[in-house]
Image (tube, rainbow, N blue to C red; front, side):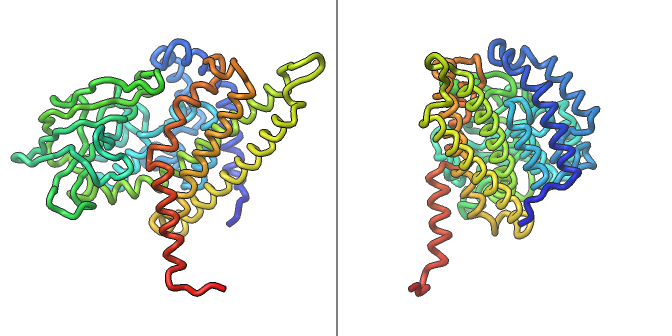
Length: 401
């Protein structure tokens, strides 16, 4: 694999790095103290600046107003944007919209694309993805209680979802629901577009995450679908194809997530090193002179570099052989990078001491919200089992010396 970065991408990432540092990170303290909604006017100003710089929607199709970067190119961008919790939002490539745009682009009908893609890519509206259920195992998406039953030309949806991220203020949801209960387990569910103003779409609450409920884009909704009626023309792709579509979404999506996590690693590593050099522990001595802190810094530096190279390799494999053939590499980065990130966040918090527990830095926010990285999109344990099975298949019946 060639790890060199093109001149075009060097220019783009340099511009993004400078913008994030000067324009985006300074907004974080206000968000931590006043909330996300309070800074929306300022965020929109920054988004307009990004549009004028022609850096808007880096990974989205050119025909809908994006930059059209490929997977590896956007991975580098995602790393830069990950340095701030606001980075992806300001540049118009935030989850879950990014994944929903990919689904609509690949599987939407011409009418669905015409209605939803232009405003979604332009950042005029937001969306959400409604899959996880309260009583069902999130690691096994073929187990689902939510149903969509045909009635005339409509689907009538009933069920309870939670961790529907960014549902607060979203214009529509892509809902996974069982449409074919008698089919093969992997062909029972479908994806259906549900406008959030549809009667029967009820946002119960934003779920508190370690004591913080969040709001607007930074929220995780619990949704109750009660006889929620939408036309069958809102079906995405063939009926019964939700699992296959989700798999298409998850491969590239994990590259985006993992490189965002590398960006978080880089931010926390910088904060840790700066704190170690400036925090006095005795007259004329700082934390940086403690061997244990030096060991943490050395370990984190190596772990971050190793994790980053793993993600770029997985992205290269997806480009060359497709997500299905690269599933082992995709699963590996999910648990390796998530654990690397949590280690770096924890070390940075430890070096900051009591300050690290407060919202006077971004570290506590990251600790609260990124711990879920080891759970969502498949828990660590599920991915490890998958990787082990794939590896062991290669040894079945094989003689080794």
